[in-house]
Image (cartoon, rainbow, N blue to C red; front, side, top):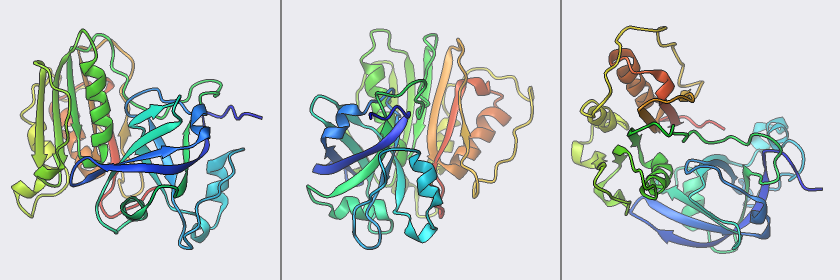
Length: 301
């Protein structure tokens, strides 16, 4: 019986790899089950399960509630799991591209991406085209009225931001866009669309000095961005978030705002940007996506 769950387990194998920059590698996965996959936005999230300590590929059931089954396992029996973005989905070819940030052998995902060869197998929890009802798993939902868009990302969110720029570039009514991308080094730049209304700035951390923390350059850059006039000190106070226990994730609400922001980076950086944009500039939270894609020194399932 075909699963109708919004997300289901897909069995895939590595088909090929291509280095996009010094820090980003594209892995193309293939397999007949990809014919049942779908994607709804450029920042569509998936989870990838990697081989465990014994080197064996993951073997989660493709039926039932995969997350419940995964969490029911003792921690030492769970295979490594990380979140990624669908970069390109080619259903007719049964292929899927995922861009991996390379940061050496310090984690199971980067280590696997560095050493995997065609034929190596993983599993994915990804959107199911046979799902009944809302699928979710994405935040890029700009209102048609948005004529000024702010984008900000570090290297972990660069694949999603690249897809967003490609979507915007394809529109006949392109909005004005400011995009800030923080990367480890200048060698991390990739080819991205360009148009007269796009102000794109690369922010390499190595050029700013060894003391630069992830997100420092994004905060400094956004403080120079063209932002709408806010209403300082209006509305409820910003609630505290323990970012070592909870992922900060403010979602924009549907509306007809002229301004829209999509920001994804390290959690402490996102919190600093949240304080600046909402607490200091008084921007409407309903127009802001503020997402912690990772936390320095922590791993979240």
